[in-house]
Image 1 (cartoon, chains in turn cyan, red):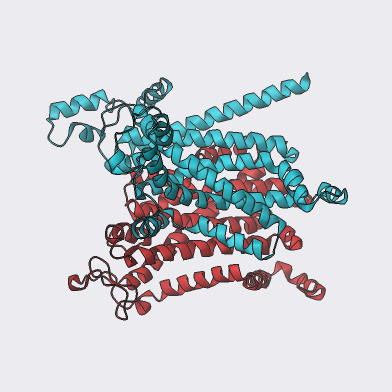
Image 2: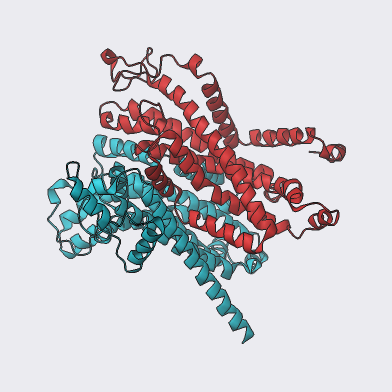
Length: 340
Length: 300
């Protein structure tokens, strides 16, 4: 009884702290939006608007009110999911983001499959061959992925695999030829084209996604490899592994069934965090590959100073990250009794 | 280190030369592993290049020569010339100064800031801790590039603003780490002893806690430098960091992008430079972790 009460108190405390973090996030985006050097009114009405029009819009945006009032209005808007309209496209920002986000999710999902598929076995191999040449090789290989400037690797990869070898598609999500051929249902191109039975488009899309996704996956595999290695080392040094071996289990069975089985949950956390971090790589890689996703939407709006769009993008990234951090926090607490 | 060494150096522990002995030992340890040796060499090279940049550069990095644009690498121009006929090798050398100053400025801002907030939060605990950690949480809820992007957008694109933005995003992990370290020995006997002797909180933090946090903070800073360099280059690439004609490596890649198909050298060499330096920091951080963590040393 008492214990459950304490647990509820813990959950409530966690909830309050999440709310405070979210509030801080809103302050941060608000401040960033307000001190942006571009004039939002000018961007909206254009260069040759009359003074009257300018002042009307100025008042409409609430920029004549004191800062704290503007912040309250901002809070109210956010609470009602009104993120304003994009100056560039003239549509609600949320609608814009809903349109571009699937492209990024598709890319990131593809990338994390490659990253986890590469990183997990490498981590296990590195741990089981600790300090041997395999370990050293994997260490350098994965650190390389972590060290490369991804926008540069993307350009070089395009130059080699697209321009010279012609193995993969170039920039964009599919060949120019196919654009508009597939009805947009989910905005996930691979799913849409499969649903429509357009296998040519599907193949083209696959051809285009493979290069950026591989690069993103490679860069995120460094983190996954490192964490897998250290989790595995913790397990291998424990006595139950010796016991399993003494019992007569093969080395392979011990490692994959027992030791690896015990790190699965930890791994899920790590992969979740790596998935969030892909958003960062996406900003750069989408610019290089002309990928019409969230990252490109963010950077293009940054450069023209579209305040509403930028603030919302930053907010969304923040919320995604807070969610992932909470997830890892909870799992960490559940699995490491020392932190209780 | 043999047993006698350890015994003889023990009485000298309080004096300054001890720090030098430790530094020498760490350096020797790092030089034994080929990977961290590579890191050391690249870093040494970077510093040499930056210090002697005007002597090493074969041309003026800013002087244009429109008769000599987009020349492939040759004896006259080691790494070729760019779209304005400027020597790429000389620009890379000049760019090493920019990279080094980014590293230096970010380190001297982020290290002390993170150490201060982390140790204070960890030592006092309670409300102070809650407030400070809330603030770091907010900053940590962004990937560093996105937050830097937002800050630079707010401050206006320039190299200085990029450095400020990167510093603003880089201190929270350091603070987190210092706090975690502080909490593990907040209850230690030697802290209690210092308290009983009447040492003030500031003195305890400065003399007893900060030195204990320093090794892990140092490793974290080194590992972070790779991210800092990549973020700075990324900002430069997006046109939000160093502005042309500054020979910042990321910005050089951005301008070279247009000529990439025919003139591969424009983007290849600056990219390799970024890759080498950030790889060097990662390898060095990896080596430092082994060198400074006794638990890891025993495991080896």
